[in-house]
Structure formats: C-alpha cells, structure tokens
Length: 330
Length: 131
View 1 (cartoon, chains in turn green, orange):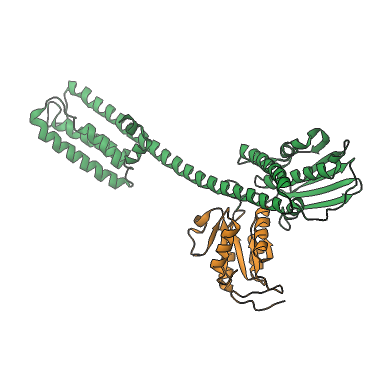
View 2 (cartoon, helix red, strand yellow; view 1 turned 135 degrees about the vertical axis):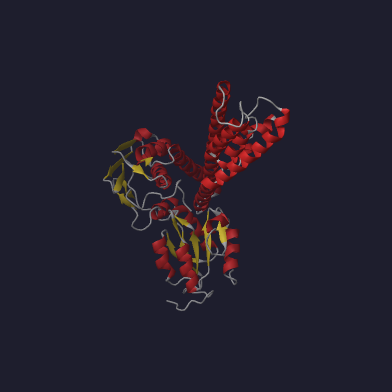
C-alpha cells in the first residue's frame, strides 16, 4: 500500500481545480448546502460540534473548485454554523465561549485551503516537468538516431577504398574524434564549443607538443563542432602519414582569428617532406569539400614545398547558430 | 540535355535516374550519395538549405530525397513544389514518421539510420519501375 500511496502518479487523480470563478462558486454553494443538510440530519445525535461537516466541505470544495471557492465555503459554512449551531443559536450574536470555536474554525479552514492550494501548485509543476521530460526524451531519441547515422556515414565512407584491416584502425580513430567532440558538446549543451579546447582534445593523439596553437577566444556553434573535430582529426592523421608529423622534427602551427563574423584558421605544416596533392579523393578530402554548404564557410588546401597549408573559414554569424532547442541535425 | 523527363521517366544522358538530395549534414549527405551511386542513381543536385532545394526542384531531376529538418527549417515547401511538378520524393529523417506529423503529406518516410536495402525498398515504393 505504501508503494501505491508514494507513487507520484497518485497525484494525477487529484482533480484540477475547475476554471472560472462562477463555476467555483457554484461548487462552493453545493458544498455548503450538502454540508448543512448533513449537519441538520446528524443534529439529534451530536452536540458541541457545530462545524463538523464544514471542515470536509471546505477541503472537498477547495480540491474541486479552487481556493476562492474554498474561501466562500469557509465563510458561508462558518456563518451558517454560527447562526444555527453555535450557542445560543439562531442568532449571529454568539456567546463569549463560542468565539474561540469560531476563530479556530476559520484558522484551521484557512490552513486547509492553503494546503490544498500548495498541492495544486505541486501537481501543476509536476505536470510541466513531465511534459518537459517528454520533449527532452523525444529530442534525445532524435539526437541518438542522428549520431548513429553519422557513425554509419563515417563507416561507409571509410570503407570506400580501404581494405578491412586498414578500415578498422581508421574507423576507430575517426569514431574517437567524433566521441571527443560529442563529449565537449554535451558538457555544455546550450553553449558553443570552444575552438582551442576542441583542437586540444582532438589533436591529443598526435602529440600536442608538436603543435603550436595560437589564437584568441573563438567558439563554434554546437552542431558545427562535430564536423570541425573530424576535419582536424583528418588533417592530423594525414600529417602523421604524409606530412610534417611524419618527420621527427616536423611541426604544425595552428593560428586563428575571430573577427565576430568569421573564424579564420590556418593549419601550417613545417619541417616535413614536400607534399603533393593526393591523387585519390579520400575521406578527408570529401569531408573538407562538403563540410560547409556553398557560402557557409570554406576549406582550402594548398600543397606547398614547405608543407601543407590548410585554411578554414568558419562562419560564426547569423545562420550558423542552431535554432532548435537542442542542437540537432537531420 | 534531355528534356521532358516524365513523371517516372529516366532522364540524363547516361540513362540513369537523376536525384535531388536535400540533406544538411555533410557526412550523411556523402553517405546517401554513395548509396545512391551503388544503386545506379545519379545525384544531379546535392543541397543543404531550403532555399537551394527550392531552386533545385526546378532543374532536371527525376525524384528527390528530402531531409525534413534543415538546421531548424522544414523542407515541406520543397516537397510541395515537387508535388506540383509531379516529381516523386521521399523524406529522410531522424524523426521517423513523427517528422511529418501535422502536415498533409502522406508519403514514404525513410527513418535514419537506414541501410542501402531500406533505401532501395523506399525508392521502389515511390518509383514503380525502379531497379
């Protein structure tokens, strides 16, 4: 029984107070009439309990008709009880020792109305919280579906042109980069992702001591962080394989400026072998080409004798920001 | 350029069906392009915004795949335009059928994530002589 009574769902059985002042007053009038009738019927059997039926009437009316109806019941019930049943009876001029009973009735009745009012507020708050949780759960399902689709995309695109063994390492490393970006985004769901934090996390596997990061405060819209993380991860992977990080003394410098409209970032490799443009369009190139819609930012690669130079322009102005409650794509 | 691509007709010099893909997530767009390529479909246009989709609807395409939620915008106006042009289309969404709830579209919805077999089945539904 305890479990049943503790269940918050029990609160759902609490009727919502009826809307409208006059409806509440009608409920109050009915309550007072029923209480008076009962009190009249039990009069031969009781003595010294003038208000006995008006207490439950006040509670029931407050639950069904709201606090104002409860107050009406309290006042009308108190008046009727005082007139008919308080000594000396059939007059509002109650005797001295009955005044205490009358005052106690009003104080206790007011307390009851107040408690029922609090209960109504609690139920209303609970209903709102439940609805919110519902919306959040739906949004989460949507986000999970999107992330799974993203993982599927990475898998399919990684499988293009790689054998099974290479696929596994590549896929897992990309998944790692995605997970890190996801973790950063989840830490502050409503805030944009800090660029230098993102770079630090994503480039960690490539040995941060070989990178020179330099730039002011810049943050990417929450949804944009994932793509940026994957892009930087690809640049890191390629550098380890073919670029400056493949040489013992090679370094990568990353500099960025934020002018409020765009973040311009330059990835410059030095101290590695001379690089040439890849003959094949791999995952990284496809990502770089499609990461931004036309006009929404750009990635450009320049294969120079000194090393790769990649410039990225992230839009941070209007249009880049997510408009949905939680960052979502799809 | 081939003109007068019929309702379900096969346009394009290559004889392949030409698709319009509207998807705002770049990697997912790449995957769907890849899948369509495997299914022998040519991706004539791949766009990420509603405005670009509205323009692309008027080009030489045979059918369209529409992501419902485009960075907070809904792709329904593009679907309406496709219907007016008599071009078949299907919705691709993370919301499942829930995504079209509250609209009068009664069309095929492909829920993400989906397999290439799901995509083939969905295309067969909107293009009877597909495959």
